[in-house]
Length: 270
Image (cartoon, rainbow, N blue to C red):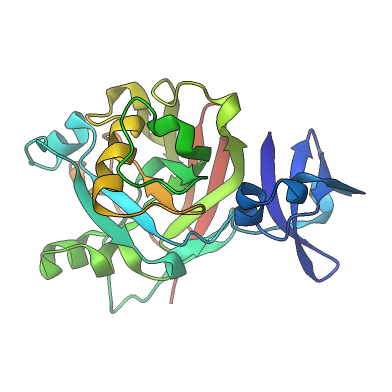
């Protein structure tokens, strides 16, 4: 099932995408679908995709992100591949949806970079789960762009501001339920900027798999329904290019993951 969150008639709705039509569901938000079986009931209302405003598919309770989870990406930035997951947090206030603007102030950062990623949505409370059972706790998957201010990342010596600025976590356009993606380690990720391919990788190349990450994180944090894990980006980021390339006013970034969809956002410098 492909699930959308959208605005229609001045109200937010959850719906199941069926071609170009959306079957509206009783749920008021995605987390309600995870915790209340009645919320998956169809209301009988049918909306057309062309007539609605897409919203971020969810605003996660926690966003736990993994750095350098692809060896080639670590190498292109001059870093060694980590021996255990490099974990950091992203602010939920950074989340925007498909079609929304990525924005930043010119006097705050001049090195805004792209990072196409697979995002994992937790559907059941997970605490100290095993790697073997970890995927049982996944509700679904979506596309993410872990936008990064490289100059802030270097200057701050940690990543809170660089990864957490408002609008720096685009998500969507849909969440695909876990039953449609039995193997999250077999998905192609492609990122294009202004139509030019920058990243072309596979989740098969992750150093730490989705199931390992869930097990690892659940030893430190209780993962709740609606929490999200950003699983890292493949090689091809702008900072690693010669010369480095960064996003600017009017840049259009598209991240596409096979079987999930394409997330496209434009950029604006304030």
